Image (cartoon, rainbow, N blue to C red; front, side, top):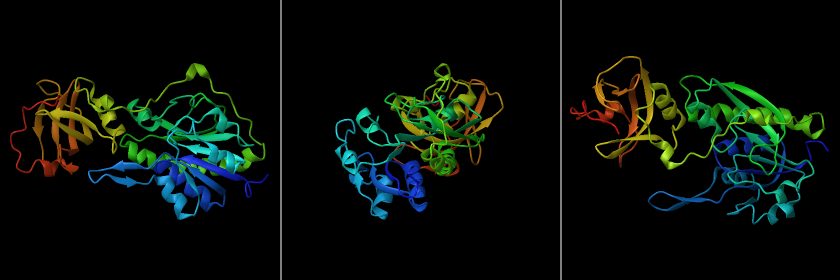
Length: 312
Protein backbone atom coordinates (compact mmCIF):
# COMPACT_ATOMS: atom_id res chain seq x y z
CA UNK A 1 0.00 0.00 0.00
CA UNK A 2 1.31 3.45 -0.87
CA UNK A 3 1.32 6.31 1.58
CA UNK A 4 -1.26 8.10 -0.61
CA UNK A 5 -4.22 5.93 0.40
CA UNK A 6 -3.19 4.54 3.79
CA UNK A 7 -5.75 5.23 6.53
CA UNK A 8 -4.14 6.82 9.61
CA UNK A 9 -5.39 7.56 13.10
CA UNK A 10 -3.33 10.21 14.85
CA UNK A 11 -3.04 10.22 18.65
CA UNK A 12 -1.69 13.38 20.29
CA UNK A 13 -2.73 16.32 22.44
CA UNK A 14 -0.56 19.46 22.71
CA UNK A 15 1.27 21.98 20.50
CA UNK A 16 4.02 19.58 19.39
CA UNK A 17 1.41 16.99 18.34
CA UNK A 18 -0.74 19.58 16.59
CA UNK A 19 2.21 20.79 14.50
CA UNK A 20 3.02 17.23 13.38
CA UNK A 21 -0.66 16.45 12.70
CA UNK A 22 -1.17 19.51 10.50
CA UNK A 23 2.06 18.74 8.66
CA UNK A 24 0.78 15.26 7.81
CA UNK A 25 -2.54 16.67 6.59
CA UNK A 26 -0.81 19.30 4.43
CA UNK A 27 1.33 16.53 2.92
CA UNK A 28 -1.82 14.69 1.85
CA UNK A 29 -1.81 11.87 4.37
CA UNK A 30 -5.30 10.52 4.98
CA UNK A 31 -6.09 11.12 8.67
CA UNK A 32 -9.38 9.35 9.39
CA UNK A 33 -9.56 10.24 13.08
CA UNK A 34 -7.73 12.08 15.84
CA UNK A 35 -7.51 10.83 19.43
CA UNK A 36 -6.56 13.35 22.11
CA UNK A 37 -6.80 13.82 25.84
CA UNK A 38 -10.09 15.38 27.03
CA UNK A 39 -10.49 19.15 26.88
CA UNK A 40 -9.51 20.95 30.10
CA UNK A 41 -11.20 23.53 32.28
CA UNK A 42 -8.77 26.40 32.86
CA UNK A 43 -8.60 29.79 34.53
CA UNK A 44 -10.78 31.60 37.01
CA UNK A 45 -13.68 31.65 34.57
CA UNK A 46 -13.55 27.83 34.34
CA UNK A 47 -13.54 27.90 30.56
CA UNK A 48 -13.41 24.58 28.70
CA UNK A 49 -10.40 24.80 26.37
CA UNK A 50 -10.00 22.48 23.39
CA UNK A 51 -6.77 20.53 22.97
CA UNK A 52 -4.43 21.77 20.24
CA UNK A 53 -4.88 18.63 18.12
CA UNK A 54 -8.66 18.94 18.39
CA UNK A 55 -8.44 22.48 17.00
CA UNK A 56 -6.45 21.20 14.01
CA UNK A 57 -8.80 18.26 13.46
CA UNK A 58 -11.88 20.48 13.49
CA UNK A 59 -10.19 22.91 11.07
CA UNK A 60 -9.93 20.07 8.55
CA UNK A 61 -13.24 18.34 9.36
CA UNK A 62 -11.64 15.29 10.99
CA UNK A 63 -13.55 13.36 13.67
CA UNK A 64 -12.10 13.58 17.20
CA UNK A 65 -12.26 11.04 20.03
CA UNK A 66 -11.30 12.08 23.59
CA UNK A 67 -11.56 9.18 26.04
CA UNK A 68 -10.81 9.72 29.71
CA UNK A 69 -9.03 6.36 29.63
CA UNK A 70 -7.88 4.90 26.31
CA UNK A 71 -7.21 1.63 28.14
CA UNK A 72 -10.93 1.26 28.88
CA UNK A 73 -12.44 2.84 25.80
CA UNK A 74 -11.07 2.44 22.28
CA UNK A 75 -14.07 1.24 20.27
CA UNK A 76 -13.74 4.38 18.12
CA UNK A 77 -10.36 3.16 16.88
CA UNK A 78 -11.66 -0.36 16.25
CA UNK A 79 -14.56 0.99 14.22
CA UNK A 80 -12.27 3.19 12.13
CA UNK A 81 -9.99 0.19 11.41
CA UNK A 82 -6.87 2.22 10.52
CA UNK A 83 -3.93 0.83 8.56
CA UNK A 84 -1.49 2.78 10.77
CA UNK A 85 -1.61 4.65 14.08
CA UNK A 86 0.81 7.51 14.70
CA UNK A 87 1.20 8.82 18.25
CA UNK A 88 3.02 11.95 19.33
CA UNK A 89 2.91 13.22 22.92
CA UNK A 90 -0.55 11.75 23.45
CA UNK A 91 -0.33 11.60 27.24
CA UNK A 92 -1.67 8.11 28.03
CA UNK A 93 -0.19 4.63 27.78
CA UNK A 94 -1.63 2.96 24.67
CA UNK A 95 -2.93 -0.54 25.52
CA UNK A 96 -2.20 -3.75 23.66
CA UNK A 97 -5.75 -3.85 22.30
CA UNK A 98 -5.05 -0.66 20.35
CA UNK A 99 -1.52 -1.66 19.34
CA UNK A 100 -2.89 -4.82 17.68
CA UNK A 101 -5.44 -3.03 15.47
CA UNK A 102 -3.45 -1.55 12.55
CA UNK A 103 -1.77 -3.59 9.82
CA UNK A 104 1.29 -1.33 9.85
CA UNK A 105 1.45 -1.19 13.65
CA UNK A 106 1.53 1.89 15.88
CA UNK A 107 4.51 4.20 15.58
CA UNK A 108 5.51 6.98 17.94
CA UNK A 109 7.35 10.28 17.42
CA UNK A 110 9.42 10.64 20.60
CA UNK A 111 11.41 13.71 21.67
CA UNK A 112 14.77 12.13 22.52
CA UNK A 113 17.50 9.94 21.11
CA UNK A 114 16.34 6.63 22.48
CA UNK A 115 17.14 4.66 24.55
CA UNK A 116 18.02 7.87 26.45
CA UNK A 117 15.21 9.75 28.14
CA UNK A 118 12.22 7.50 27.87
CA UNK A 119 9.16 9.08 29.45
CA UNK A 120 6.90 12.12 29.56
CA UNK A 121 9.39 15.02 29.75
CA UNK A 122 12.38 14.25 27.50
CA UNK A 123 12.87 17.81 26.21
CA UNK A 124 12.87 19.37 29.68
CA UNK A 125 15.03 16.58 31.10
CA UNK A 126 17.65 16.97 28.37
CA UNK A 127 18.11 20.60 29.39
CA UNK A 128 18.17 19.78 33.11
CA UNK A 129 20.80 17.12 32.43
CA UNK A 130 22.93 19.73 30.61
CA UNK A 131 22.91 17.66 27.43
CA UNK A 132 24.56 19.26 24.40
CA UNK A 133 22.40 17.43 21.89
CA UNK A 134 19.07 15.66 21.73
CA UNK A 135 16.84 14.57 18.87
CA UNK A 136 13.81 12.69 17.63
CA UNK A 137 13.31 8.94 17.49
CA UNK A 138 10.50 7.29 15.55
CA UNK A 139 9.79 3.85 16.95
CA UNK A 140 7.32 1.01 16.87
CA UNK A 141 5.16 1.03 19.98
CA UNK A 142 4.96 -1.75 22.56
CA UNK A 143 3.13 -1.88 25.89
CA UNK A 144 6.25 -0.89 27.81
CA UNK A 145 6.82 2.89 27.75
CA UNK A 146 9.03 4.08 24.87
CA UNK A 147 10.70 0.68 24.64
CA UNK A 148 9.83 -0.31 21.07
CA UNK A 149 12.18 -0.96 18.18
CA UNK A 150 13.63 2.20 16.60
CA UNK A 151 12.71 3.01 13.00
CA UNK A 152 14.68 6.22 12.48
CA UNK A 153 16.27 9.09 14.39
CA UNK A 154 17.70 12.57 13.88
CA UNK A 155 19.96 14.68 16.09
CA UNK A 156 19.61 18.30 17.21
CA UNK A 157 22.12 20.56 18.98
CA UNK A 158 21.03 22.16 22.27
CA UNK A 159 22.29 25.73 22.51
CA UNK A 160 23.25 27.20 25.89
CA UNK A 161 20.42 29.73 25.63
CA UNK A 162 17.79 27.17 24.64
CA UNK A 163 14.76 26.89 26.90
CA UNK A 164 12.14 24.16 26.76
CA UNK A 165 10.02 26.54 24.67
CA UNK A 166 12.70 27.23 22.06
CA UNK A 167 13.72 23.57 21.98
CA UNK A 168 10.10 22.44 21.54
CA UNK A 169 9.81 24.67 18.48
CA UNK A 170 12.97 23.19 16.95
CA UNK A 171 11.99 19.65 17.87
CA UNK A 172 8.53 19.79 16.35
CA UNK A 173 10.01 20.85 13.01
CA UNK A 174 12.61 18.07 13.23
CA UNK A 175 9.93 15.56 14.26
CA UNK A 176 7.69 16.34 11.30
CA UNK A 177 10.58 16.36 8.83
CA UNK A 178 11.83 13.00 10.11
CA UNK A 179 8.33 11.50 10.01
CA UNK A 180 7.71 12.67 6.44
CA UNK A 181 11.07 11.23 5.39
CA UNK A 182 10.50 7.94 7.25
CA UNK A 183 6.90 7.05 6.42
CA UNK A 184 7.26 6.19 2.70
CA UNK A 185 10.24 3.92 3.36
CA UNK A 186 8.63 2.29 6.39
CA UNK A 187 5.35 1.58 4.60
CA UNK A 188 7.24 0.00 1.69
CA UNK A 189 9.14 -2.27 4.10
CA UNK A 190 12.47 -0.64 3.29
CA UNK A 191 13.42 -0.04 6.94
CA UNK A 192 14.37 -2.74 9.43
CA UNK A 193 13.66 -1.43 12.96
CA UNK A 194 16.51 -1.75 15.48
CA UNK A 195 16.13 -2.93 19.07
CA UNK A 196 17.05 -0.50 21.84
CA UNK A 197 20.08 -1.20 24.01
CA UNK A 198 18.49 -1.72 27.43
CA UNK A 199 21.82 -1.09 29.17
CA UNK A 200 21.74 2.54 27.99
CA UNK A 201 18.19 3.39 29.07
CA UNK A 202 17.60 6.60 31.03
CA UNK A 203 14.30 8.20 32.01
CA UNK A 204 12.51 11.55 31.86
CA UNK A 205 9.64 11.27 34.33
CA UNK A 206 6.60 13.53 34.39
CA UNK A 207 7.47 16.83 36.10
CA UNK A 208 5.56 17.19 39.37
CA UNK A 209 4.82 20.25 41.47
CA UNK A 210 7.60 19.45 43.93
CA UNK A 211 10.11 19.31 41.05
CA UNK A 212 9.46 22.97 40.19
CA UNK A 213 11.05 24.39 43.36
CA UNK A 214 14.64 25.58 42.98
CA UNK A 215 17.30 24.29 45.35
CA UNK A 216 19.43 27.39 45.89
CA UNK A 217 22.16 25.31 47.54
CA UNK A 218 22.72 23.58 44.20
CA UNK A 219 25.34 24.63 41.66
CA UNK A 220 24.82 27.67 39.48
CA UNK A 221 24.72 25.51 36.36
CA UNK A 222 22.09 23.11 37.72
CA UNK A 223 19.84 25.96 38.85
CA UNK A 224 20.25 27.75 35.52
CA UNK A 225 19.40 24.56 33.63
CA UNK A 226 16.29 23.98 35.70
CA UNK A 227 15.05 27.51 35.02
CA UNK A 228 15.61 26.94 31.27
CA UNK A 229 13.95 23.54 31.37
CA UNK A 230 10.78 24.72 33.09
CA UNK A 231 10.35 27.83 30.93
CA UNK A 232 7.61 28.76 29.93
CA UNK A 233 5.51 26.07 31.57
CA UNK A 234 5.19 25.31 34.46
CA UNK A 235 8.01 27.65 35.59
CA UNK A 236 10.62 27.12 38.30
CA UNK A 237 10.05 28.96 41.56
CA UNK A 238 11.53 30.03 44.88
CA UNK A 239 10.05 31.75 47.93
CA UNK A 240 10.76 35.37 48.82
CA UNK A 241 9.13 36.72 51.99
CA UNK A 242 7.07 33.49 51.97
CA UNK A 243 5.59 34.33 48.56
CA UNK A 244 6.09 32.23 45.44
CA UNK A 245 8.19 33.94 42.78
CA UNK A 246 8.26 32.10 39.47
CA UNK A 247 11.55 32.54 37.64
CA UNK A 248 11.37 32.29 33.87
CA UNK A 249 14.70 33.66 32.71
CA UNK A 250 18.14 34.07 34.27
CA UNK A 251 21.78 34.54 33.31
CA UNK A 252 24.85 32.92 34.83
CA UNK A 253 27.24 35.25 36.66
CA UNK A 254 30.77 33.95 37.21
CA UNK A 255 31.59 35.95 40.33
CA UNK A 256 31.85 35.00 43.99
CA UNK A 257 29.74 36.85 46.54
CA UNK A 258 29.66 36.71 50.31
CA UNK A 259 26.44 35.74 52.05
CA UNK A 260 24.16 32.72 52.20
CA UNK A 261 22.93 30.80 49.20
CA UNK A 262 19.76 32.36 47.83
CA UNK A 263 20.59 35.82 49.16
CA UNK A 264 19.99 38.85 46.95
CA UNK A 265 23.47 40.41 46.87
CA UNK A 266 22.92 43.14 44.30
CA UNK A 267 20.53 44.58 41.72
CA UNK A 268 21.16 46.26 38.37
CA UNK A 269 18.75 47.98 36.01
CA UNK A 270 17.77 44.60 34.54
CA UNK A 271 18.79 41.94 37.07
CA UNK A 272 18.27 40.69 40.59
CA UNK A 273 21.58 39.03 41.47
CA UNK A 274 21.27 35.99 43.73
CA UNK A 275 24.20 34.19 45.36
CA UNK A 276 24.47 30.43 44.88
CA UNK A 277 27.12 27.91 45.93
CA UNK A 278 29.60 28.60 43.12
CA UNK A 279 28.78 32.06 41.84
CA UNK A 280 25.55 33.88 41.18
CA UNK A 281 22.49 34.05 38.96
CA UNK A 282 20.99 37.21 37.54
CA UNK A 283 17.20 36.89 37.48
CA UNK A 284 15.83 38.57 34.36
CA UNK A 285 12.16 37.65 33.98
CA UNK A 286 9.87 36.63 36.83
CA UNK A 287 6.26 36.27 37.93
CA UNK A 288 5.51 37.54 41.44
CA UNK A 289 2.55 36.01 43.28
CA UNK A 290 -0.83 37.12 41.82
CA UNK A 291 0.85 39.18 39.08
CA UNK A 292 1.69 38.75 35.43
CA UNK A 293 5.06 37.64 34.08
CA UNK A 294 7.34 40.68 33.94
CA UNK A 295 10.87 41.78 33.28
CA UNK A 296 12.89 42.37 36.43
CA UNK A 297 13.48 45.97 35.32
CA UNK A 298 9.71 46.55 35.72
CA UNK A 299 9.56 44.66 39.02
CA UNK A 300 12.36 46.81 40.45
CA UNK A 301 10.43 50.05 39.95
CA UNK A 302 9.74 51.28 43.47
CA UNK A 303 11.66 48.40 45.07
CA UNK A 304 14.75 49.60 46.89
CA UNK A 305 15.06 47.21 49.84
CA UNK A 306 15.70 43.87 48.16
CA UNK A 307 19.43 43.47 48.80
CA UNK A 308 19.94 41.21 51.78
CA UNK A 309 16.67 39.35 51.41
CA UNK A 310 16.92 35.60 50.83
CA UNK A 311 15.16 33.34 48.36
CA UNK A 312 14.25 30.06 50.01
